Length: 263
Length: 218
Image 1: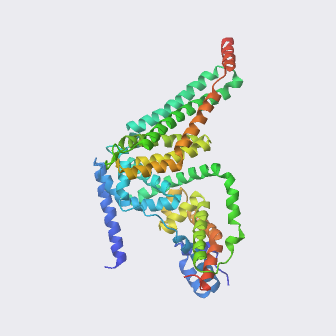
Image 2 (image 1 turned 120 degrees about the horizontal axis):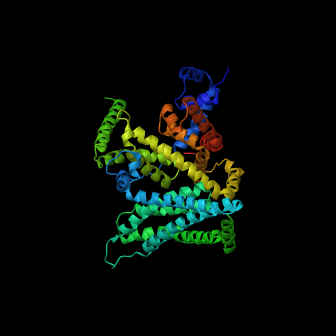
């Protein structure tokens, strides 16, 4: 007897088989194939026990709260979303970076042809490093303020963190762009820290505007436990060093000037 | 009226009500979109969690799916089902997120991979466990870890195809649209995913079956 192939049994089990009746007929008379099907089913049944966390009964409401401030008044064309001030600012930052890198590249073209590629790369990296450094600086300041926030008096039942929350929302947009750029550039270390920072920014952006002292303490502990402030500082320091290292030396500048004069 | 008929009727009612809500949103009633978000976010979260395997990414996928859905609502054909449509957007974004995550982890954790392989090949993991309680618990934790690992080892397309077909019950055509692939190729992707999962998990599942046969599994 010709037995069923594994993919025929999988197709049957997953309900995508085109010859179901033939398979049913075969299974009725073939113990070996029934055993094989049972083994496939056992694996799938085990996978079915993997739990999915319950996001909570008010999850839909929370999602709405998170996305509502980012929605345009009227849905419509994709480009309209980019006209929102926050997105415009973040996109503007990236555009400025690209233009600056381009202009710098054009200027460095006038120098020694051999040095051109290296120069352009250096300038481009410096612009990126500068922009990300600023972003990390802003994030650090926001996190420090949040870590030091405390109720004005012991009887205060709620603390308002709406300012930090709005800043976290703004930083989140930028952070996503820089993380993606870092990934494209192959800078995995920076991308990894930006990813961790994104999680913290998400937590802050999604917190209620008014939190109880206990909730505030929980947020602060989370920031502390992740060690994100330390990581942000270390990366920022590294970026500053990189910036220093990519600055043209006086000798290089002189040689560029000489080349320019010759031309 | 039987339960299946009731379920079909309720799905149809939701789809009709979704269509009306989409119209209202397009007419400028932004808050109408809230109804759609609240109605579908649990389902989208479940899909996103199963695809990405972690809560943080799943929540990001849900938000991004509804944001993109709103931005593209003008392109949504009224005859389609909003639930299916936003689901597709979420699946596409989840694929992108998985790719990014994989790249990040490959770069970050290259040295740790050897340790993981060592654990997978540890013969102790394959030893049959006859004792009942604490060991059984360990075995179940180990099985769960192996399942998560096996799912993580699938390619983005395989994981998407498996999650959408096996857990979410989506049609092959629908999955093919997400994977930008043909129906036949999509079917093959489902087969490949199940084969890989089976290969990775069979030893652990068999151990469980054997334990049950021995009367040590409740």
